[in-house]
Image (tube, helix red, strand yellow):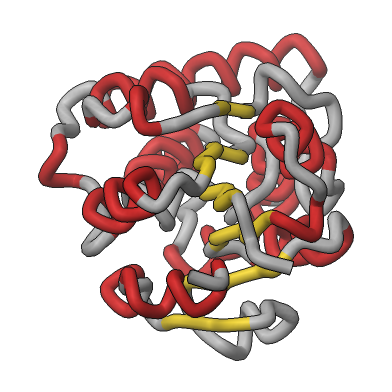
Amino acid sequence: MPKKAVIFDLDGVIVDTAKYHYLAWKKLANQLGFDFTPDQNERLKGVSRVKSLEILLEIGGVSLSESEKERYMIEKNENYLSYITKMDENDILPNIKSLIQHLKKQGVLIALGSASKNAKQILDTLKITFYFDAVVDGNEVSAAKPDPEVFLLAAKLLKRNPDECIVVEDAAAGIEAANTAKMLSIGIGKKEILNEAAFVLESTSLLTNEFMDKLIGN
């Protein structure tokens, strides 16, 4: 069956906001008295803000009350927002904007499926919101990836069956969610991490129009 929709993750696929998440979490970890490395940050990819904080506290061996957790999550997000408000179209990852434009010309529907609660703000900052036929972010779903809710809701909003959708993801949790939803999964990143994806590309520079045309069935 020809694929009629493409659902993009945000962080690490459309824009590299992962580095800003890392800086904000690292700042919080340092406040709590421990360091937080890029390798440890890999565990936070594709998971919710609440789960990310739990992992961070586990790494640091720190216990907090629920009210403290809430306060630190707000603080972390404020730090993160201070970074991403400085972004512009130059922060869009290689090939992504031209690919989205190409897909639109082909009549392929496009959605965003992200755990980020700041996704809409980021799309607005990058001036690409109008390309998306549907945007599903952390404000619309109750279950984080690897639960497939975010992708299934995106397909529903696009009025497409799951088997008509392609998902582009950079996190193992996102690939698992796409596979559970019975969608074709493309992983952006390391094969050893994203080995459950149908296709794995080292970077978005390899996510070409020609590659996607073959998958879509054009």
